Length: 502
Image (cartoon, rainbow, N blue to C red; front, side, top):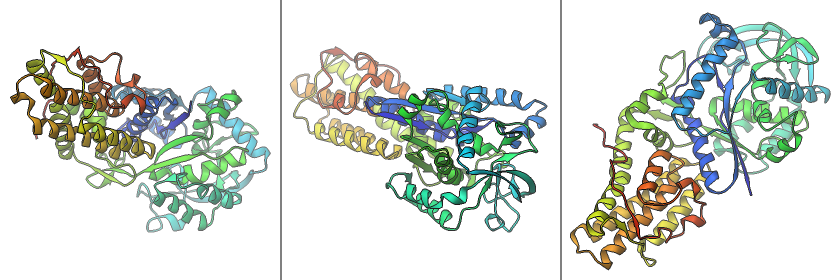
């Protein structure tokens, strides 16, 4: 049995979740669901990043302690993910004792191996990023390149990670396989950054107490990124269960946004190497989810809560839009109007209408009993192609392409019905073949689409009279043509996706 370990970024607890957080989380959830269909042993990790100056400042502004602030907003993330049917196996919080233990253990190894040393540093620092920048990286010499807000000048004596010693090894990692960092443009961006020269980085603070204490120097706490990144190791037993850690690492799939590319593709692999561990096997990088051309942020006051959209589109409508319309990789611009259009076209008209129409015609022409599909149906080859194309797309972390392949099969089935018009024909073998073919397509689609729209596909499965649930099917063998047995009742019901006013 293959293993599949997928992670989201862990999210800062300085504010409530918005759709920019939901996008990578829904993507990771869909990937986890797909790999469970494959029969892979799957571990899906998400969580919250709860240390650092940004959290401490937001807590003070809210009149709370940092721990109270973390507790309140971690709960908000859990509530948001529950509302979106996120099936994580572990929700990690960096304030947990298990994470403090793993952080100290991994960084102690890097220190013992001679890659962490005491030094002094001063330079421009972005509080929102929790990161130092070189002056050449700033916009107009004063603004953070990510948040476009003024940086502050910090000077501290800290422990430094000797990142500069890892340039060649990180390049070797990045070029070891074509899918280490995807898309390729992002890997090239990292390579360009490294070739510009890596500087050693400060990884501890003495001016802040809200963090993980440094084991060899308790007056220091680890800088947030060198605490947060280790969560991926904590969750699979680093420091407490070596067998479990070895079973899952390094075959991980990190889902990240492009704004944290440097941390995951330079700092994180180097830190692992410094501790004697292998770097991650896969990093999948998506672009920004923009609103009117701007990245969502607390500063811009343009964050949209997932619940606001779920109220209008339902959970499946929300999930489908962000998996289908937001291509993984480039930036995407959110539009409410585009979301309505996609919902009506794909979910209400194509998918929902196919399910409703087939159930209605089975009721009138077959006395409500679904006939078996035709083994020689022209839809059989189209279904096989859809399964293969969708599987290949999920494998390369291209949900929009996987869903496009699935919806092509839906369109093919609708066209097959239109060509034969069984609602106009007398009951008999010809009608049975056409409707059996359509029912088989619906069975296959219910499985293929279940990572994106689990609620609607489960309802459809039940209406088809199939036992269990779509997630019980194993792909690809369980999607071979002819799996719908026929001779079982087909239920009519309310539209799976009621059409929305545009």
